[in-house]
Length: 425
Image 1: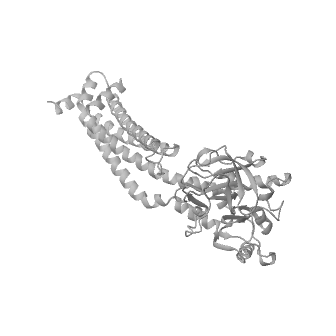
Image 2: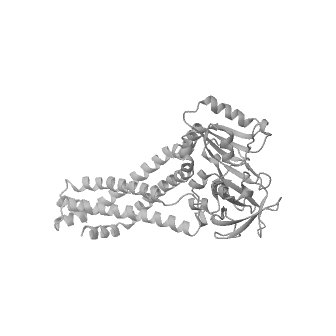
Image 3: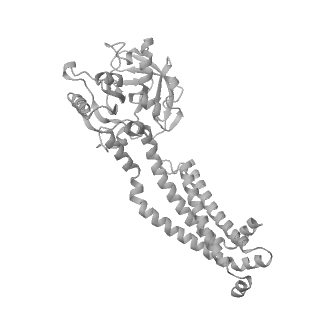
């Protein structure tokens, strides 16, 4: 009965109820926008978070070479880097495979090899298929992922990767195609370093790249094939005289044991700088701190304004709810005379608040879902996930609790007779 009476009350004050719905929608949308911005940043940061807490350095380089005594030879993959720097515990890296094309595809192809930590952990939205899986590492068929390419290459295709300088070819099974406008693990040498996790990512856009396609391979698969003499043209250890030309470049995270002294790290940094083309080196601890500052940048910048807007709108919504209760006092007096107690009357008002707050939340959820479905929010970070939903539900209950205090104070301590006299026609 309480619910039925609340529905009738809602119909009587539909104009004021819609005003409350609109005000609550503003709060919900603000919460969704802030949490979405933070969540997107956290998604990329969390890929690297285990390594940023370690003792180590970040390197942004055009190429890394060995010392003069080794003839300035290029370092070609992370295993070779580990052999070159014996104090290092782990290397998270990428290397460029030079001068590659795909038979039957006229688009320019840039091929990259990724270390196991990247292929294990990278979290990226896929248009088709999937990202690398651990079973791929033991496959006899070379696996690859390509960036968005306007339908030129699909997940499941078997393409022929070839060298444009030598008569070298490999069949590559494409397991996935990334969405467009994704931040892939890469590093732009044409922008100033940020000093945070963004230096490990590159915003790939097919149109901005003028139709270029990135072909991404797994170093782990290539290294595991070494015992079976597989992928010899991609593994210089099997065929040092002939193969696809590779060089470590871009973003590299060098991880040391926590007990390694700063003197050893500084010596190895100096060793790397001797013949390498390095744009930037900084400590992972500094990178981690800067990353957290960036993640919560919007919160720091807009938190005062967000709190002010939320408090103002909440006060306005609660005030509007109080006005609705005042307008309904005559009806509550009649309900009281007909047998309801004042607590039941307060529960009717509470149910009205629950309904208006619920209608507002459902409207916001549906609006975001529909706008994303039709593509109107395609390039926006705003979305309705579990974090956004939980945050909105917390605000939902906060409003309901606050709005319930008003009717409880208004209905108690009043008499039905006094209310009817004060509201007589």
